[in-house]
Length: 424
Image (cartoon, rainbow, N blue to C red; front, side, top):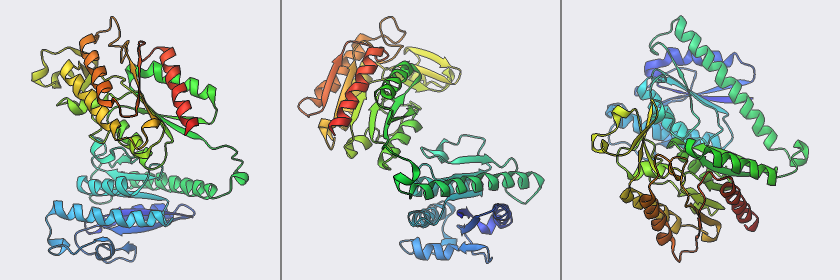
């Protein structure tokens, strides 16, 4: 059996939620647990957890006034917190195998926040939403939330919404059943499943301008040991956050953080691909084997060229594609990037498991000799800030004259990580 949580505001969308529930129940071996996060109480036999039950069990404190009297923003935040705790409890006790929600921008925000906070990557999550065809980054974040555009507003059943909700029911039912089966198999002994060898899961960060290096690393690791499984993260902000999250969830055993470009978008105002100030924190806090390099730290990302802030109009810009414009990082910005990296790595739980590899011949295909972003002064400042910041710390710094995409450099980085893995 698989149990799917159905999350929604029953005071405004009861009919639509009940229809979604009925469609899920048409699938064999699927049960539904309905949680009401609405403002006003609704009585219906299908509701398993009412707002008052949610608040009393998971609220943590009594609101200064009745939840129904709270301003909309405060209410959504409070109910999201309660729902998060409830879902987390249901997950940790093994009671649920999938979650689905349906709503507008407010309901989507509430449900997405709860899903991101309470459930790990790999657990089936789906939101039917009126905002799913727009910018979904703020809702999905670094999580694996699937979003299905409702086409029409979720405001009364009609033939279009019935089709969309029926599809949603089929999607989440199948995903939940698959997840339940995987969990059941995982509980079997290795001998029963035929598993003979533990996989070492290696996270690698990549950008288009460091792809040759990552491809070479993956090939070399695979040739060295078939038990090495590589997980490549596109360093676009969400990718970096996803890797940090998976490390914290125990889903990654070692890291080649080859492409640390997201730090440029953090320290340079206006960059659109920052992974936030916690970037580079998870691996060092966990104490897992970690190689850090400086891939694509020569550039900051903006949207279309016309969106680049006016203050950068005299800087070296490169139109990567119609949606992405790159700007060359200058010497002062390079210093800030290097200082950030060094400061993060100085806090390593086990400095002996961390190495920094500096590709002196260029940090991307664009900044090596003859490239459009070649800037020896900025690179020298970056490299110096990293070396000086880590001097005497115990973190090994390897200065190499090759560029980051040199196949020999990539192979040596892979070999260095393998040594750290075997040593640890």
